[in-house]
Length: 227
Image 1 (cartoon, rainbow, N blue to C red):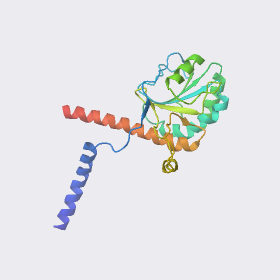
Image 2 (cartoon, rainbow, N blue to C red):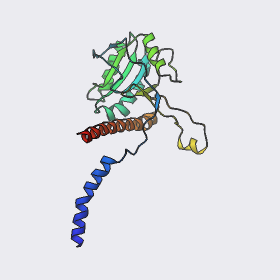
Image 3 (cartoon, rainbow, N blue to C red):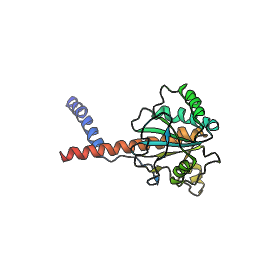
Image 4 (cartoon, rainbow, N blue to C red):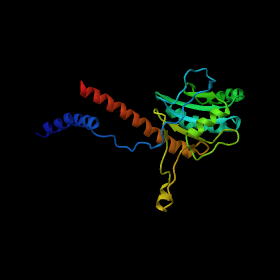
């Protein structure tokens, strides 16, 4: 009798787990939408000569290098080490860095440095825009953060497949919450702070990928039920 019970449990347990995964809701909190429908790219030239670089349909890391590429090199290298290496294998993922005209040689040197640490750069996109276009895209984020006089910033942004800016409504640390500090939002991720990249940005990107994976599974399940 004991053997029969054990065999029954071993047979039924995997079935129970599969059913549980299929019919239970995803147990996570989606990454908040901070701004809906951000401005899309219009007037740009791809240094990589790629066609149609857009936010829609992609999970995008957006950065502003302006005409200050040389001094923003550490930001890009930090992003490469802590984010690109983790997520470059995911479909529909891209990094878009906006630069102004005259920075092509600096970008060439920067890409050579990146290639020392990464086997391939297919998800990196360096786009040349004029200052008016760069400012238009930045203002479309409605971020309280500012660009420097060169049109660049330490902060980079997560834009989802539906062209929404993602972030956090409450970015307080556990200590700040315990001490009753007022809430403040997270619009962009500071690429000079390694903990922002390996902690906050990495966690938030994982949540976003899980969210889209869940949506895809739900859609497929609904189609199967219709059939």
